Length: 167
View 1 (cartoon, helix red, strand yellow):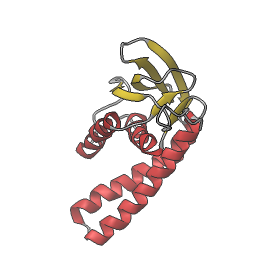
View 2 (cartoon, helix red, strand yellow):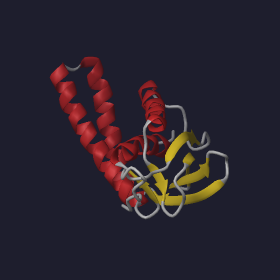
View 3 (cartoon, one colour):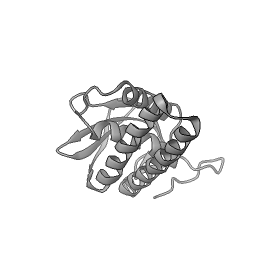
């Protein structure tokens, strides 16, 4: 990943997402749990993120996410609404991890209803591990295009998962 250049304080300078818009045509309504995860991911992403399109000035950005023909489309605009860049990524490298994540999420949500706390914790640890794997793959796919940190990549993976598994 390309690291942002340091600012005057010596900290890495990075842009920030101030809004994330999910393309309604790309997503369908889902279970209450997935809807909740999606809303929390957007909220958390906007609250705290490091998001810097490579080769563009450090500023606030708006991200439109959609899936078109099994490709992830990341349309980036400035806070003022000016187009910055659009990246289109194949979702193929994420297909297996998203499928695994979907299965473990189903197990997790079922466990919440019926399992013991230790069983829930074990499933949740596995869920977080698969989530981290997907986030790492997403960071690799964004390398050279958009610099993000791991917490930002985790929240973006949650949204990619929500978009990828339409209907």
